[in-house]
Image 1 (spheres, each protein chain N blue to C red):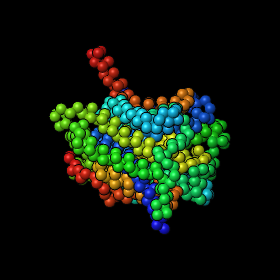
Image 2: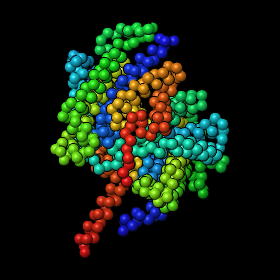
Image 3: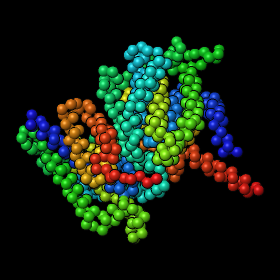
Image 4: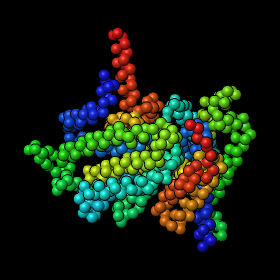
Length: 291
Length: 335
């Protein structure tokens, strides 16, 4: 009984931590540029797939991870510079279509380079499962949680302690004012996309040994991350983390206790329920609409 | 001249009719017909979606959900329960309309990205239900749908028919049906846009607050247009099911929803003929790109991105703006 519950909880927290990282990526880009980046999931895919293929070529794991993260970061910069920046006057829905176009493009390239098969990644450390109160814990889960926590702390420090982080915050609050005090806002936007891509690729790498990875894994993971970000309230960092973890846990519980067929429906029912009662999510900013 | 011509709505409808009459000359084989029939059915769906997106300014990323519901309602009512097609389409449309009204009331209060999230969620939930209720829908394997019957006539793509003494094939008969449906869909949409309801909708798009200040019941009109666009999708989904003869949950998928909204935005939001062009282009593109084989997806994404970056207003509005600018320049040069 307890073992079963713990089992679902572990699963939920692990996948929830991944969702939280994706949601943070959404939040970052949303705050900086008010764009919802539907290509966010592709950063995960690039992270996982690049690591797998580099290690298969004989590159040491650590180096492969670093290279994969750098690749995703460059992709983030390119996305902002080449696709988002030229269309800055466009409608919200036009920007959505542009990011969708970008995600199809990236997925298409991944399919050509890496094929359509599923790829397996080794656990970072032992593949021996750990037993806790009768529940079985995959050692990779600890890596997901640990690295997730490090990323969150790192992000907080980045935004509160570094000049670049503060510049991103300033740009998200008021772009014109930020420019007036000498912040190069275009640079800052590129940076925001890069950091978001780094987050996404790290999430994609740490979770790859658990979920496997393939060229199209970004679609559903990206959408779940978007759901998590919306549950928490778009633009809220705390909301992204809380939204991600709670989505992961609720999903795992529903899959375990109710029906695994409807596991994916849980996320979407949950977001509808949250939005019915709190139209701006759990931690969304109260915005006074100016007319 | 061209501008005035394009603005005149009845003329637009007549041009479309003329194109549909002439088009069969260029259609060599049944495959061409099938492609054009699919285009017409999907174009009629996005004409309905455009009422919501282009005129009322509300985003829907889940419209394939309603399309899929309509398709499955028709499939189940005619296939499993032996209904006739017309009652199945009508009752299906009413049922989907009610569902759209029930979910529309709460989610249309949301704005921007939250609305896109909520509509995406509704579409996803419908697709998941269609995938999992195997006993009723056949699950991921899909289900067969009987041929369309129209007042006792079985309209099958494999049949042969005689129309006023002329011998026509099944796909040609379907072509006539799909053309008439598309023309009706456009005619209804244009009348709606020109009616007081259409004016109210445009005021909602312009500024929701201003609209409510001058006494427009914005919640009511938003729900109404949401329901109308869902009914469009439902009826077209039902026709699509009959035409294909076989449906899978893919008709309700997220990818299909994205395809619909992309047709609207690519063709030109708020332009009825623009979104039809969008549907035609996006249905044709995979055929053209098939030559690139494994690069097909890459090219598709690239073209989508580039078009939206350089023509953010969509194909048709950009083309007409360029043409009328050229003509004005020409007229200015002569004077």
